[in-house]
Amino acid sequence: MKLVDKLRQDAEAIFRAGLSAVDSKSAVTKFLNRNGRVLTVENLSYDLLEYENVYVIGAGKASAAMAQAVEEILGERIKAGVINVKYDHTLPLDIIMLNEAGHPVPDEAGLKGTQQIAKLLEKTGEKDLVLCLISGGGSALLPYPAEGITLDEKRQLTQILLESGATIHEINVLRKHVSRVKGGKLARLAYPATLVTVILSDVIGDDLDSIASGPTVPDRSTYADCLRILHEYSVQDNIPKAVLDHFEKGAQGLIEETPKAGDPAFIKTQNVIVASNSLAIQAARHKADALGYNSLVLSSSIEGETKDVALVHAAIAKEILKTGEPVSKPACVISGGETTVTIRGQGKGGRNQEFVLAAAIAIDGLENVVILSGGTDGTDGPTDAAGALADGRTVSRAASQGLDAQEYLRNNDSYSFFHPQGDLLKTGPTFTNVMDLRLVIVGG
Image 1 (cartoon, one colour):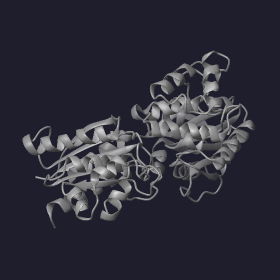
Image 2 (image 1 turned 30 degrees about the vertical axis):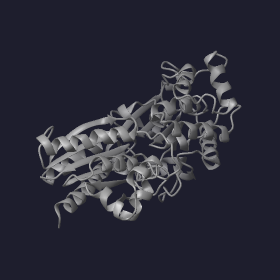
Image 3 (image 1 turned 45 degrees about the vertical axis):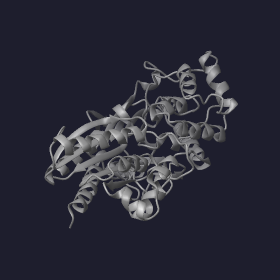
Image 4 (image 1 turned 135 degrees about the vertical axis):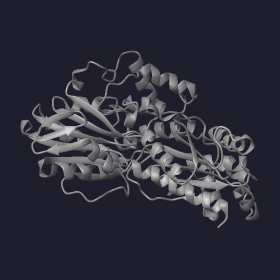
């Protein structure tokens, strides 16, 4: 076996080790424990005999597996439950109902499911316990537009923001302010019941008010922030008029702001993160060390335009080859976070595939260098791939097939570039979601 082929195999093994560490079902059982009548969530305990009913709600690409764990822990103590999940991300459940819906663009099925969640919360009282399961994708999977805004108008807003290059933090600020459930409003619907939210973090910094647009935590953002973001990306004239009017009225104080710290809705609320990007990175590093690499973690908080981030990673590979810095060969450099793509072409792909394509161009001709990038949720953009991997000969191999890497990059068509070469990273639904994992491997 050629060394580069071994490096490619190792890259996939390291990536999958990171995935295993953030298995959502296992993550939930580490933080939720039941001993008879007492349910312990992290450092707080709840006497189940003090509650008349236990309900389970939530949304996200990993929420089905999280619900399985909760059903195993609480069993028939659960009165009812409704959770919105992405299409084809279901698992067998006995009590909790799963509602399949659209992601990343919300659809009618998501709206109906969210309305069912709101209706269920109408039944709750101060002697009830509500468990809310949130994971990546929760923003798109919890659509319930504010009064005067249609789902189609909200979809247009989401799509425009996705294509503008706005960060997930910025997109979620606007999502909160056109929603009846995000930005702490779900906690308002649950009040005065006791609310425990179990979270898989898919945002940089693990900010609670950004994950799934923070449905059960105080919101620090404002309508004024929404207008600032729209102007920063010059999309204020492109979004639906009803949405822009809504933001402007909110900034003028004519529409109530999202609930802030100190709101009564949060008095009986606990939020706990059970898995994050950092956990996946550390597991990947452990696997790299076990395979004999000198490992280095760059950061779990890398964001920015994916092509620019790719060039930085490629430059690190070149420096390792040239000087042995910042880590000597054989080296495995690991990073996490979530980049963005400003769409200018008509192609098909996602931020991870585009990252690898840009990096492949930059490392063209280098010996024994492999770069991999994948989404831990198993889905990169609107494709069936989690990401891709490439080495120093990827671009030349493609050229022999008549594929111009630069042209595919300009057209945002990374999927079509990697597919005929068999270089797409495919995992299927992983039932977890803690952003992306990127690897730069340099053999020695």
